[in-house]
Each structure stands twice: as structure tokens, then as C-alpha cells.
Length: 439
Image (cartoon, rainbow, N blue to C red; front, side, top):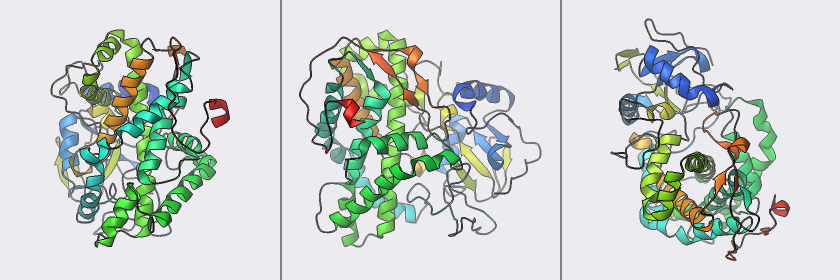
């Protein structure tokens, strides 16, 4: 894509680049420097040239105005942008994800409304609570694998595995290859769309694609209580879902459900090891976990930023954004805006109000946020109950070298006093208590 020229008079932050290898370690420093030198909205020449919104109020203003700041991606079969009225709609990512747009998140009304209306019941609280026993079994089964040893890698052995199995089952897909799919999805979320290393996971993604495709075909004659069945039932009543749309939604839900949940769990448990007062408080008050979840999402902000396309000339925080300009909504920075959050670099479980932009804002606020909260609640409470003295070994923590889209951790080694298994059986093909054989 051709680079876009910097608007005259725009504040510029040359260093800001979420796809650079410096971003994981320097992003908090860059956020602060940008606030001081450029303000809540600035231009970066990186990624083809685009605006970045790091202010909390400014980000929500843009996120809520979908008519001006569009999420749409419009490419032809050759990957060429298809401008409409002089505007090239490049979707959510920088660099752009070439190819068909992702349903729902790269849609705006009226198509967005039709999709969201159909999906909403499957993501509502009553439907979510039906999954509580299943998630509890998955968590206990993962802990059973390691609890007698007194050691485990929280990232590899729990935070990646539970969301992957749950997401596959929620969609209706086979879970036999959950470990390979989890690994691929977790790594890919930290690589830019044009990173050549993405090809290394072609086989694993093909396993996921085959599982979703097979689920769609199977559910046409055997409906169950999963997302594919829910959508097919809606299609029977006239909802506009083609097989390719159902497939894209299934793979989207799996991809989005693995990496972000693992990320917020990782940053939370690391902080709990740094702050034993918080760990002791939550262990003694498991009912506070849901409230704590919101603060940990604000603090960790797994999804660092998604892009929009300006459909008209508009002013945001005094900056003149041109029709066709790209705008990154930087959730990671807006969640630490000191104008909105006192002591933003500290976890404060009593923070009021519990508002943040970690799940986005406006019509595109994350549809799966309640599922993420449920997984977080069960994992945190179960670990603190069964491994009350768990400690992360900080020297062994390894973050991903790239962010791409989501922050995260390769390894989070932890130790604890050995305990007893509870005998949880997840009833998954290939599951074994020997994690070496399961890897």
C-alpha cells in the first residue's frame, strides 16, 4: 500500500510502531513520551503513515462514531483495495490483512446489525453460565497434570490450553489438536500480518480450519448447543449466513478467544506474585474476582490497538483528520491515560468507576468479554484455592518478542507446594495426565 503523507501541522511521534521489536519493552515509555510531546492524538510515519489515538476520551469518541471511523475492509480477490467514493477501506490492522474482510468486526451497519443480532443470545449471560461446569472441569484437569510436582508453566500448561479447548468446543469444533492450535494461534497473534514467520504455522491453522469446516457440515444434520448450531438454526429462520460466513465467524471466535484471555491471565498472575497483598485479598474473597477482572484488563490491555478508516474530514482533539486517513485506536495507551485513571500503572482493586477501553468501545466492543470474565474468574479462583502459595518465577518469565496485535507471554514458570489431584476428566481425545505425551 502506498504510504500516506503526514498532514501539515500534525504532531508526529516517529518512534511509535506496534510492529517493531522495541514495542513490547518500550511501549509504556512511548505512551508517556507521546502524551508529553504530542498529546492524545498524533501522527506516526510507520505502518504506511497513520494517526494514533492514545487518550481515553478521544478513543471512545472515535470508537462510538462508526459512521466517521469505519472498521470495514474492502479488497478484491487479488488483494487490491477497492476504494469507495475515494476512500480505501483497509480494515482493522496495520499492516492491512489482505483478503476477505472478517465478518462482524470488519463490518459496519446495516450488515453488522444483522450479524450481531443473531449472535447476541449465544454470548449473553444465561448462555455463558451454562459453560461454567465445563470450564471448571478443564481447569481442574490442567492443574491435575502438575499439582503433584509443585511446578508448572502457567502460560503453556493452563492459560493457553483452557481458552483453546473452550473456544473450539464453543464453536462446535473437534478439540483433538487443541495444543497445536493453541500454540499457533498464540504465536500468530503476536506477529504482524506481513511477517514471513506466519507461514511456519500453516499446518496448525489448516487443522483449525478443517475442524471448523467439519463442524459446519456435521451440524447441518446434528444440531447441538454450540455456536455453529445456533447460527444454522438462525439461518433456517431466514438469517443471512452463508457457509463461508459461518466459517469465518468460527475461526474468528477461536482466534480471538485464545490469545487475549491468555494475555490478561498472564499479566494478572505476574502482578499477583509482585503484590502478595492482592493475591491474599482475592484468595480470601473469591467473590471479588469479577470486579478484579476489569481492573486487570485495564492494567494489562491485551489488545494493543485496532485501526479505523476516516470516511470524511473530521477534527478529533484539535487534529484535522482527512478523509481516507487511517486511525489506530491504541487501547493499551488509553487504558493508562492519567487524565482518567489515577496512578494508572498500579493495580487498584477499589478503582472507581470500573470503566476502561480494554475491550474497545462503541458497537465493536468485544462480544466475548463475558466469556473472558468467566474463564478468568474460574482459573484465578481455582488456582488460588488449589495452589494457595503459588509464585511466578520472575527470572523465567518470557514475553513474546513481537506484539503485532496482542501482548502475551511465551513462558510463565511457577512453583507451589505440591497438592493432590481431584481426578478431573476432560474427556478429550488424546488427553493424558502426562503432559509430555500430550505435547
